[in-house]
Amino acid sequence: MFLRVVAHGSSELDKGRAETAAAYAQIAADYAWHNHPGLFASPSLETLVRSLAHAVATPVPARRRTPGEPEHILHVLTTALRVGGHTRLVWQWIRNDPQRRHSVVLTGQSGLNRSGKPIEVPRQLTEATQASGGEVTAMNDRDDDVLTRAAALRNLAAGFDAIVLHIHPYDAVPLVALDVDGRPPVIFLNHAEHVLWAGATVGDVVAHLREESAAVAEEFRGIERSRSFVLPVPLSSPQLPSRDDARRSLGLSDDAVVLLTVGTEYKYATRDGRHFVDALLPVLERHGHAVLVGVGPRDEGPWERAKIATGGRVVAFGRRDDLEVFHAAADVYLDSFPIGSLTAALEAALAGLPVVQCELPTPTLLPTTDAALAGHMIRAPLAEYGARISALVEDAASREAIGAATRERVLDVHTGETWASTLERLYDSAQPRSARPTLELDEARPVAPIDEWVQWMNETTNYSRYFSEAQLIAHTRFMPKDRRLVLAARTRGLAKLVEPIDIRTRGHLERPRRYVAADAVEPADWPVFVKAVLGAARRAPELRG
Image (cartoon, rainbow, N blue to C red; front, side, top):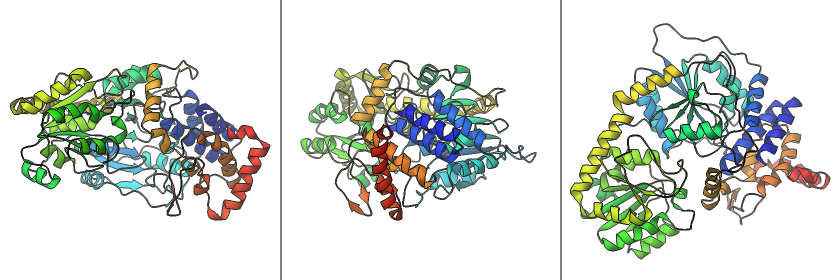
């Protein structure tokens, strides 16, 4: 299905409908992000993006820079978010590179949100950018189409010394803007290592956050090692509140041994039906003063059942951005499994907490791995996992010693001069190449075990359900109306792969339903939309895919 959507985009471009082709490119990549197509990169998609880049009439401006000024780095994001490690990494990068100016461009801060109200930019990102002498610019993704924003970004980019792409897997705006000769060096940050993303041929260098990502990129994305660079996650030493104040604010007793885990909710369900909390229940039963605290998961499902079973000693706080309070209150950090949370584990280690990881037979992309944690993170198979945690619960001195040693190692790799020198080598390696990179990949390759794991992750964590027909059509709002309506018919086939979801339409919660395209169509267009979809379905069943 993914390659068929890409092919539709190429066909539209051949017919001179570039904006429609750009919408298809974004739809294909967004679909693949949530529904693994058995590929981590696509030569067909990269070719479409490159063709779109040449379809933008704006020429690449001459480089503009005033002699003697500090180097100016442009960070391009799709959407800056308050929670999660993605945006946090950007402001930490800026803080840890103080000798340069840094500016930020947001290509889609509305986040495909039909209300038109942009998502609030995190305060920390704005403050870090302004402190460096730069500025944050949010593009008008409600009124300007993909190619218009790409042309504007191409022109803007000429005033910078290097560009770093921290973009969503589907975002075509910076790729169309920058997949040309003559622009500044481009660093593509691989922060979505376990999914397909567009842009594998755009970066002069692809920066990975760990060595395992570079290895997978070489094998499954066709990115040669000479174009890869491993940059540790940038961090800074946290300012923690006092332990007493932190526990008081969270309602935790002074004598409790607090086991903390931080991660997005979907990271805790395993392939065989067991759940993260199931592995912790024996520990909590053995130690009546132990408390499991989860930040990210909601107080429902397995978390709620465990809370009841333990008399309230499993507490799920949902999403929070005041992680320093939780770090100050905790005694032991437990990495999420089967999918690890690298940034969360590193930040816990910086707070002086020992980090424990359960070893499961999963691909190397799923569990947390990091050069600084190697030899310091406590790793144990499931059969021994509870016992290793129990030993830490019983031995405060061991907790403190392990936590202190881990903290020093993380400080050495992820902060200060060591990280800064690694960053300098990354900047030096990001030189425009004489020939634009290409991908040598077989798009019909056999399914590999890693593909099965990613597909399992999408299915069992409901990640694929986040992708609705309304979201597909939200990509098309700048298409001519006739092409938009044709796409509405085509996307019925894609929608069939998505489980029914609860949606809100005009403020009312409606029953779960599969086809929600009407939510993406202007009210005045509703009659013609229905007529077009039904007519297309009768006349051309193949459009339904």
